[in-house]
Image (cartoon, rainbow, N blue to C red; front, side, top):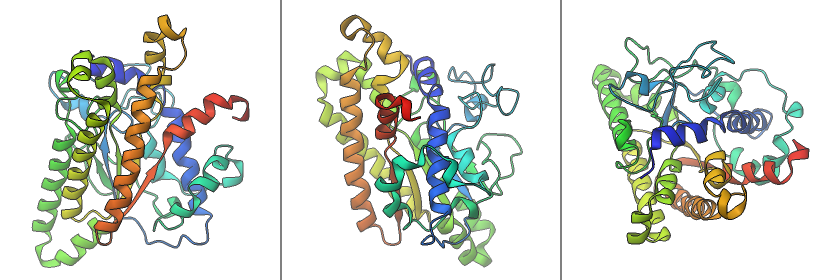
Length: 330
């Protein structure tokens, strides 16, 4: 059985800078697109794993999935904050971009053709955000003015993922938002319309699934009892449930990150060394592709099914592979 905190913290921390650049450039594109004339986004709510955790795990007693030591945080905050990166997490960048130049972004060309049509339909641009970093939900005395970060490093779509590390499951993260939205509606009962509008105009960012895939790849017992496609179906059923719960509490605008090429990360290349001499671990990448493809279909179905919902999926796998295969271009 894999120790999720130790392994996935290392794996995902290596991706933070690249993933941050992905989203910076995506929002650079939208900010310069004349078609994007969306409304102001009052808040950003973040859910997921170590790619999104802003420090929640620091406040969980006995959690072994923490980034509260150096070198985490040294490049931006000058001290560890609980983020699993030397600087900022991907969703920090979305909230703070206010003045940017798309032409200086070498990463933008990858997305200009593939995602431009979808992004211009998304009713929000980075220049309209100007939000503070959403604080961790568990941070004492935190002020949730511009949103909340519910993410927990080591977590996954399944409650069993990361359980040994005492993390906040995705189900629990959604419950925490449900509790917050319930209190918000009660507090502003006389102005329920404004509270509903606040929730409906906010941006809901989700990045999860990578730890589930990693757990499956490292668990031979699970592989013997559950076929890869069955496992993907199970993950997507959970994802569907979580989106439905958020939607019922007023969420309408979603930004979903697909799972990156886990098989090409240092950890999986190391365990595959004897068989592939350090090349990418293909079984891991194949499962990631299967998950991302199924997620794309689910997102399309949810966009048709949920009235007023707008869900955008970003395929970080293709971006990651493009860097590996065309490194000189970057």
